[in-house]
Image (cartoon, rainbow, N blue to C red):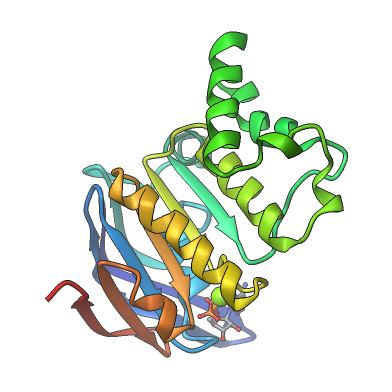
Length: 226
Ligand code: ADP
Ligand code: MG
């Protein structure tokens, strides 16, 4: 689904170029659950930004379903992102003025769906993440676990082809973390393609495949299944 070829990213500091990612060649196939791991500062967030078409590489290529997307217009890139890609982050960005129901519904207002379809989708997500009883409440009244579940439901509302998760459990307690990992595992089992970044070795074992970054290099790529 997503392939990168000799992907590099650097940031300029004065006359110097600071390389954050070097020669990244990865292939993510439909239905996979890939974990990108590595210490803080190794380039995980930057890589997710590139895979999610939020950032553009300094050099190299990114293919989304066979189409080279690093050279296309920003408008087209935004469209692909909107139609196919969803994110969750360590920092949970919900809209405080909207109820939990409305937060999950929000992305659907930007695509052509009927009111009835929308309702059906949101209710199914509320039910799935055990949020139905909280639908009319505001997210700020709840802790990070509930909020992250709402963010996940919102990310899924448009049925993205792939979900990018950047340290999604960073703010959760260990019990909540396990539960959240289980939610992602189930989603993947049902076919959702997931790419998750984490610095936690323990969480990395949840993926089918682990890509390890160190100082912007891929230092290993291993399957968890053997
Ligand atoms: P990780 O998510 O693994 O902690 P990041 O991708 O956030 O790593 O960052 C990798 C490196 O890139 C860090 O040294 C960071 O300071 C640097 N970096 C990230 N974004 C920028 C930017 N916009 N400008 C300059 N340096 C950046
Ligand atoms: Mg990061």
